[in-house]
Image (cartoon, rainbow, N blue to C red; front, side):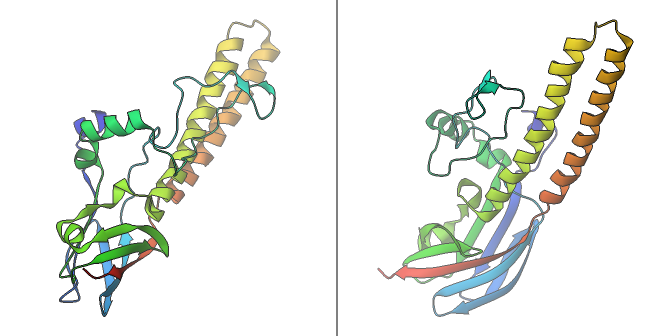
Amino acid sequence: ALLQAWQAPATVTAVTIDAAQNRVAYSDNTTVSEVKTSGSTVAWTQHDRSLPFPILALHENWPQFPPTENTTWGQPFFFWPAPAPRWDYTNAAAEMIVNTSGFYPALDQERLQVTGLPAGNYQLKINGQIVGAFNATALGAGINLAEYRTPMLEQSYDVLRLVWKEVAWRFFAWRDIQLRLQDDKDSKVQRATEGLVAALEAQKNRDAEQQYAAAQPRVTQYELIPLSQP
């Protein structure tokens, strides 16, 4: 709701490749180049201007509140680690909410359309990574890559991990340092508290620089390879 109120765009990228004419028919928020066809195989290069949206709980059972114990260290928990997607798992409740709310059409459209393909099934690879298999009809109508595991989505989860780290440090500084020690009358404690909070704030700023660097989209190589003929 906030993103829509801020008029966040729905389009991550939009690309239409005309395989029959070996050309880019349409592109939005990306630069497409080096379109090549060899038989029924189509390849091209993209340099996108934004990344798809990493959905926090879609590939993880994410708790509302951090655990009180770190089971790895066996000691009280002070820093809640970043979410790590399990790509072989989909949270059914999160998937239902995403689909019924219209989230993808409203805020996460990474549309790929390839027209002019001979009938049959095709394997889509991005940077050599298999994304999925689609028939010519589906590709001709267009698919939303944001719904699939791609190098771009993996990169966006890396950005989410860095953002989460920044938020966790700020939460720790506020909850476990400032709140606990704010009423202490000892001037040494107050100076130490200010120093710790300042150090964590500096760390937060360094983390922010890493986030912006990590969020820069990378050049990607696409390849559509025929799997079978009807």
